[in-house]
Length: 207
Length: 341
Image (tube, rainbow over all chains, first blue to last red; front, side):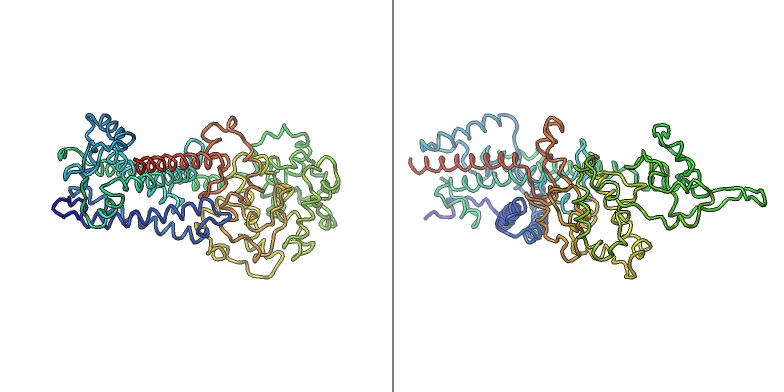
């Protein structure tokens, strides 16, 4: 059994609470979103119920995002999302090479988790895209659909509401893809379950 | 490696959000509707903006429009030899602009009305003249067979309007022959079609004076009756009343069998689904338009969209499914190779 002294305390309580809530809400939004998208015949949840749950979960996700956003403005956690542009592409290629080849040769990860480097370059890139582009876009377009009088009436000859709907759909789709990859990549740790344990107890188990 | 002097992404997003909010607030234009309303208030119905010379019968029709085309009429009192001006009864004012943009714009007034109207003052007996219904002219005529007037008439006879009010409810209630113009299959502007068609219903259901022509009942409050409908305003703007209140028949462009209120559509997925009932009517002429005609973005992403929310675009659904399947397959192969090693 690994002692806590060998482990890194990377996930403070607020991040763990935010993360579990974010994950549950995203899952709820994906399931209800698909039920709305493919509504006839009923996919999983009935249309009217799916819309109500989707609306409530969407607002909850937006509120939860504010916690993440403020937390990242004022705590050390925000620094992990800083991308150092110089040499980033090279580091991205190096990490990609590890995931596609090195991992099967039992090579050591090129960017091991440390107190200063919580995320490897691929994680950093995908988390910035997910948390600073996809989630904000999904919240903004979601609000636009919840209050359909907000979007502009016309953009390039197409109703603003149609654009909002299309962007919401695209963003929701990419968040779904992100979640699949994210959950799978979480099985790449000291053991397949160690990263899941980490986000619950806060301690990262080193390879 | 931590670079504490760098700008955090959260700050970038915050600044962008503030920027977009300001742009949104200041880009709001003044209320275009109120400007339009003001113009309509000052509209002078005696002056026509339509070029009357384009219509073969306009000269002859001016005999009637000279009085019926405006809010007052004048005549010489034979005894006093004075010119007398009187207000024209509102119900018999026919606006030139409206008539000459209607379906019947090429008609002579006397095609439908008695020649005796050419004599002034009109004989009292002319008040008994019966109004021709649509089927009187359009029924049994090969020229109009593609519009299926007989089928429309049958649907109408089975409608709650006809069943409740019998012969008192005529085609004219919704289709005033002096003003009605076809919209759904000729107008590319879907919003205009929706507004035009809904105003037909509101002519009675939004105006107690017209509503009580056929009944002594109190007019239901439409807003309260539709309290259950989410985003009520958006639905009222974007959906025609008949989509939910009439039985859709695939062979007709516009459903005419208005059903009793308890049979109206209340299930969201009746419209918000791949099999949306809107495809049977409002979108009938628009879903066939191809990418070439609408342009790539409109054609690929918006051509099949009937409702907000559920997407009925098969192309996008297939692309999404392929991307999702490829992702899962790659992850499964990756997992398999990890386990194997």
